Image 1 (spheres, rainbow, N blue to C red):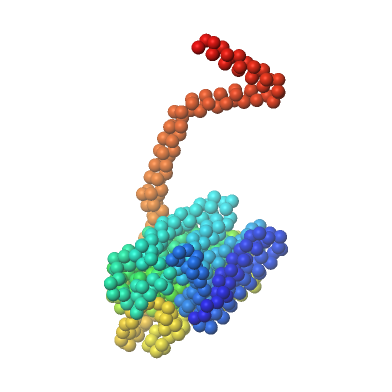
Image 2: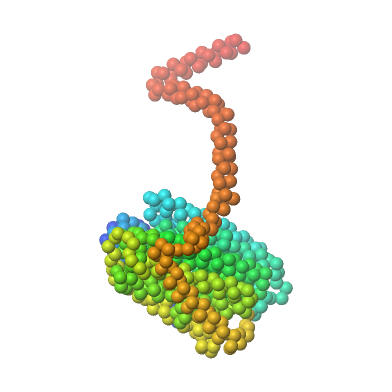
Length: 619
């Protein structure tokens, strides 16, 4: 691995775009800001690929903070994330040139977009936890700016604040976790911590396991916030307030996968801590199931896909919790393709319908959007786990790893996979099938929006072939490549018959659920749903009252407490109001003595002298 100053240039290119477009972007005609921003992200991708092809890279300033270097590393794990962040991010940038056409904030949008990419690259390339945390907070800031991009509408500004505030809860866990590691090991360099804690792929003799457990759990809390896991999941659906390219960038390639990456980058903390890993598995399982159930009731085309992101992140956490870190990253890779494709297909539909986002007013887009219909179909099938598509292979790997951990976990995740196939078909049927239920004149998107989706479609079809199970390919491309950068336990593969049985069951469940969902939700499009499902959808639409619970237990009590304190503060100040008024009046009276006339001041001096003499005589 070479030491090179070219490594931070991967980050500096989009950061330069943020600065230039932020300062002078308004002077540039459309689409120049979008072209510049896209080119700089492409430059980061190409530079990252070149350095990765040369065996990786490292760069550090050792004396940045005593004991904490400003260090970056490009290894196989961070290299995969650079490909996802900059690669898929580049396609989303190009797509946004068409989507944001004629928007008054066109240049400001791409300035924020470049900031988002730069912050995420800091996060994935950082080799010390404080550097990672800078990127961690950077993506939080960029998401705030982008979710609330159309800030003149109150709902958008409120959604941005909600995302920002909820993430601060997880960030506190991250900070406390760093504090524990610093107190016990005297360094926050990830490479140094790995050498101290698990130098030979197992915990060092005499290591303080309690301290490692506490630090690992606190960092996990940080991951819960950033990746919107239960119970800090309430911000993610509200992130749909931003423009559609923002939703694609946050949900597919960047921010929400940061928590998964944090667990895998610090696998040396988790790989031999079954108690902490159990909580990772439990939270991931609950989030996967919760997100899938919430998707059934949504009527906003983007919120359906948003809740699918919530669920898919739960899959990734389950994989990391059971120790299959490479599988978690495998799903990050495949998910980036099909989730970006789903969001950008949704954006194409919204564009075609003049901004309409309610699926109840859609339908029939198969007849109007000849390219987007293929994109939407492939995205939905990949999400639903159709055999041979990318989503099938990564989900099957998660199901196999879950089966090795617990048969019960495998069963719950299999049920969740079936639900995923059902709601993915709901999205497709309500948008593309049947008759058009609106009043617009749908039209296909321009080439600048469709070509990125062509590339994402290819990724959704074929990306899964880099991680095939061993019964199909004795050694796949991804597992040994990623495991060079991940601390993990080597274990025996499942018996061949068991592996084939799991693949067959996964395939049959996916095919059956996709077919059933296709037939069942045609009834919803026609308004003929069973009464029980309508009642279920009402609860699902409100996210099973998660926000209501938060409002009842936290928001309203804290608002009431704040009002009491504010009124008490006002009453306390009011009690001294007479003193303030008297002081103010006296000051106003004395100010009138400042006339600026010399004779007035001389007369005043004479009067004062006479008064002093009289006082002396009287005494």
